[in-house]
Image (cartoon, rainbow, N blue to C red; front, side, top):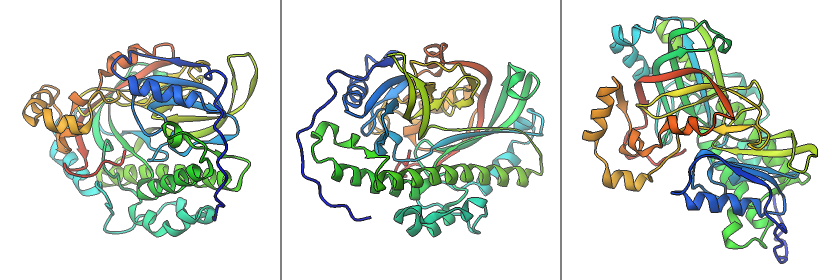
Amino acid sequence: MKTKQPVALPFTPRESLAPHRIWGDHDGEPDALRQLRNACSLPVAVAGALMPDAHVGYGLPIGGVLATDNAVIPYAVGVDIACRMKLTVLDLPVETIDAMQDRLTAVLERETRFGIGATHRDKQLHPVLDADWSVSPVTQRLKDKAWSQLGTSGSGNHFVEFGALTVSDASVGLPTGRYLALLSHSGSRGTGAEVAGHYSKLARTLHPELPQTLAELAWLGLDTEAGQEYWAAMELMGQYAAANHAVIHRLVARALGVEVRLDIENHHNFAWRERHVLSDGTEREVVVHRKGATPAGEGVVGIIPGSMATPGYVVRGKGSAPSLRSASHGAGRCMSRTQARKTLSWNDANVLLRERQVKVLSAGLDEVPMVYKDIDAVMAAQQDLVDVLARFDPRIVKMAPAGERPED
């Protein structure tokens, strides 16, 4: 859509920051705290929260949650729109991880694709291809590209891995015990990234009044054509990201010739229209952005991963109002990719991997366990947000090979 360049008016922030709460220790993350405060100064901001895994991002920090009034902020959704988790319990004994490790390894190598521009040799099929891709000029132009990348994982912190799931609460959908599970992390691939880039640029054009420190938080009103167009594209990217996971898990289960016993999945880079009770006691509909944050409404089940050698958790939300019914989306980085490549070594990482009995098929040094915060400290900091139902311990891990530009 063509947009007329608006006249820049003086920027008027809120008289005071929107109410916000912080979980966890962020003494080493001053930039993440600053980014949350910046977001809470926007005139459209209603409330905010920072999760215990938070670290600096574009505009809103990773692990940031922001409620706005009738507006959506593309960079508060994130570049990888609808990045999500999916866990599938397969009908194989957990001992298969050791007894048939070569077979499981071969299946991951054959059925998954990683890296920028990764595609399957044969295009995959999913009902998402029958959706209306004309909702945005970006999605319309890139439908064929999206189809070619359907069922692939990209790069960065995306992964597909086999591991042991230990169920401690049968309300998750299985009796207590140990199971073989497949866990994946990926989003809307190149198409989602182009949607994010297009509408982030458009939002900045529409808000020339924003100071440079807030430019990445430019918003689109949901009562405007641009806002409605982005929202429709974001929703489509949500369906597409879910389809990517569905295809990955279908291919792996089919290659193993096994049935699925349980599926759990959730987005963590998305915006939702939700009704919330706000700090002033009023209840109304707001737009909740969860950028690297897991939906944790009362009774809502989700997945919070750790790293390639540390556990992840299946959780049930407690519906905390101050957190805008949210929780962390993982352990969170404690080291930049550049610092990791300069200071870490695979020799050190391999010691921990051997100790945890983890086999890594491919990954970059910037994704080894030492670049992440302590997942159990993160979980301890959000006991008021979620209950743990099960623990996932990775054993066979595949990520993009070293040298790939991160898409996360």
